[in-house]
Amino acid sequence: MYTEQDTQKGKSTAKGRLLIVDDESRHAESLAMMVASWGYDVKTAEDGAKAAGMLISDDFDVVLLDLHMPVADGYKVMDFIRKRGLLTRIITISGDPIHG
Image (cartoon, rainbow, N blue to C red; front, side, top):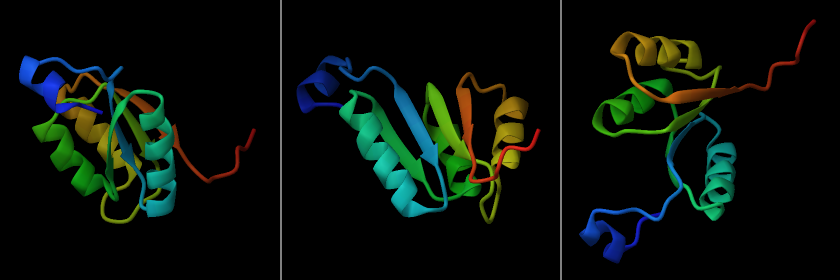
């Protein structure tokens, strides 16, 4: 998280900026609290459409992305990131069982 003093200096003490995208608000909030406690600046979005808007207006180092959401799913968000040439890493999360 940023402090007022760091913002005034144009510096951040955060290790990086993460966007957590998940339609299950309790999952997103618990992940956000955990990651923020490690020193990261964290924002959340409840669907892919809101995430796309945030990705346009702000830079994120990592997007932690649920694959299955209403409005715009994780696959659409990944396509959006690729088409825009955004320089962010993506980690996908899903409740789907692993087949293989």
